[in-house]
Length: 132
Image 1 (cartoon, helix red, strand yellow):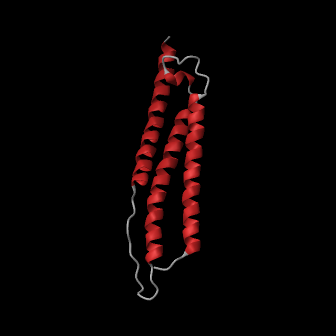
Image 2: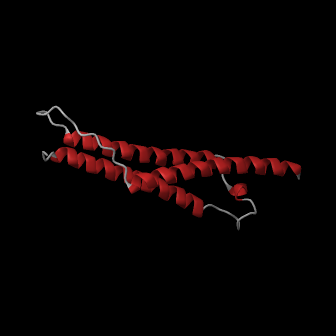
Image 3: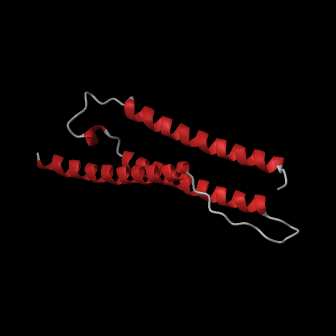
């Protein structure tokens, strides 16, 4: 196998940048969650949630899910690029799916579901507040 140093560096940079972006998004979401003015937690958590929080959770979940899919495709494409041979006119196709990719897919799906649940909880909270 040839030692393609520029491609290896670009690959490493792309992976590091994707993890930095994900970490920053999760840190921003955590800071917003923990340091929001909650006024000693009302009975319904939805009461203090901002109106667009459910769509923000869904968007974050889609982003994490997309990152998991992109990591899996990235690994597969890197295997194909590194194994391509001009002499033999052949390429080895491998599907690379690691624990990190599965973790991203599961967490992304869970955060998307949380967004849907928070949307429904907000709708129920608005409906119940009309009764009183």
